[in-house]
Length: 317
Image (cartoon, rainbow, N blue to C red):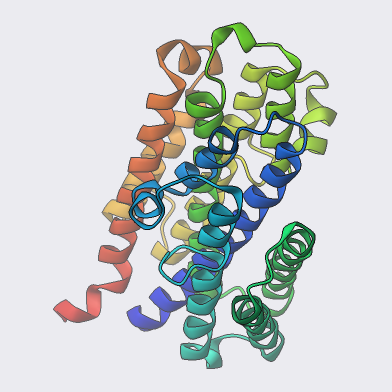
């Protein structure tokens, strides 16, 4: 497979995963805002910080307001990571690799594009319409995932697509957990309070982990939630489960499960191995924010190494 084709498939899946994650964050945060005191900055600023686009938001808006944050994350053309731009870029990438995907996948991505395009043209993002819009984005992206799983041959293209999806997913899980630890809880006195529990439940729901967490642990506790989202090997949105899936795809693409064939495989294997032997109590005592920040930096390094190892190779031939 040509490097540019593989790169396009990889990013098509990353953009779709990013759009769905944004819709998840926004939907859960909207529900959470209904149960909390009307402090707009405390409720909505963390949502922008999670995405890593706080500096851009500050350059465009002087205040943190619900409507401005929702528009910025959902439809703002000036935000390269907005749902609108992510879906648009996923569609352009899908168009470029049309022979590599099925008719069903193309039509569903196309339908998502016209959904966000219509929403932008009509700027319908009041409270009532926002919920419906976010639900359609989540359902539409999950429909693409299902079609991708059930209609694409398990070839190189499938592995590159899976690689993009799970690396993006691991990054977003780390960010939403980091936001809870670093931003949402301002006072240690609130630990264990009703507000604290509401926020932890919202965090689990934002990554669709609430039901599976309760099935395994029952009671909501910060350490158990962090352990579930970071170190669980069976829940598909935990960071470790994403890394395990990514490593399987890399092994298939590299053709070797012994040692490593390139720097991307080495870096990913090292990070996965670290998480397999990490203990949640040690993570918390050493500093959750620092630990998650390190994971995010290393995921970025892995993404760059994947590009250098697989996608940039044609330039040097």
